[in-house]
Amino acid sequence: MKIPFIDILRYEKNFCETVTEKTAALLKNGHFIGGPVIAEFDNSIKAYTQTQFALGCANGTDAIQVALRAAGVEKNDKVIIPDMTFWATFEAVVNVGAVPYTLDVSKETLHVTAHGMKEAIEKFNPKAAIIVHLYGWAVPETVEIRKLCKEKGVILIEDCAQAVGVKINGESLFTNAYVATTSYYPAKVLGASGDAGGIFTTDANVAAVAQKLLNHGRTSHYEHGYIGWNSRIGAYEANFMVEALKHLDARLDSRRNVCKQYREKIKNPQLKFLGPASHVAENGYLSVALMTPESRPAFIEYLKANDIGYGTVYPGAMSEQPGAKGHLGGKISHGHADWIAKSVINLPCFAYMTQAEIDYVVETVNQYK
Ligand SMILES: *Cc1c(COP(=O)(O)O)cnc(C)c1O
Image 1 (cartoon, rainbow, N blue to C red):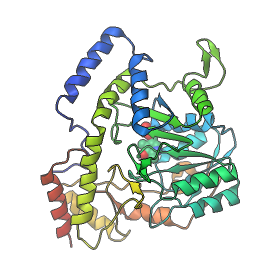
Image 2: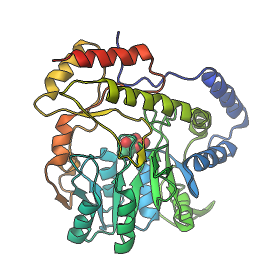
Image 3: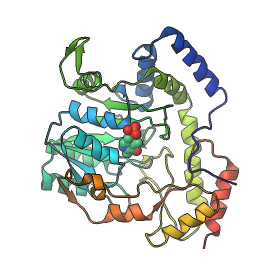
């Protein structure tokens, strides 16, 4: 058996037919930018995430940039970001002219802590902070960090690129986020058929400014109140995702089931499976296990030899990336992000993985010595 790390082509029955039919309608009505399907998607994702304002944009990286600017981050402002995230978080800060400061993550939860955030705020006196909810979980101390940032007057942006469908204390992670962003990159839990992203907020003013920023700073058709971007979401992507969203709960259930089975059935002492905090409900984006920098390389060779795909999300700390040189303002590092990067292993996990495929992965990993 050959099992890919991810297979994004396992659609529901009739999914492709419905998308194709709706695409044919788009080709006839010509609403390629803007138009009713964009509003339909914005409304559906707003309802799904239980937010007050939801805007589509071109991709998850732009979403962070627009969010930073809309929330008031300006040139040379300091922004704290986790040392363990996808590079886009770092890039977005630099691309709006602000300066990233990295904060190390916990070796246990793999996310930033409220204690660490407090230390970083006191040390760097930042204008803003970005927390990143990785692996389909949530930062365990999200509520505490929201409160802390509010008290200290620090703008908090939440990068939810991997967190659509995640709940914290039984409530959507998005509901109480001042500003959250996401990515609809095809491999995310709610993927488009190309690039797309989203901005979410509880603040009407942030929503209004973000809407203008992502459309050339337009205040009316030919009046430009801001230097913005062209970061509009296309109608094809919105169309595809309106349909995908109808199946999202089923897709997430299927993914969660994969993660759960690995945690329960894989008994190899060389892999330590991790999961979200007990008050967090995951979306099943990734299966995460920790090995050690010494044990991982041979295990990866074993997976390759047995035709099992794998991931190492993410294989490097942000502050150590070659591109960080000359841009990083400062960092708080205990070496955790670097250690996690060298120790993490992700086994295949995607919607509609079959039981036979799951069994094959479980048995193969259990047989590894
Ligand atoms: C995917 C991802 C992004 C970037 O999204 P794009 O749509 O690829 O620009 C940003 N942050 C995190 C944590 C991601 O996983």
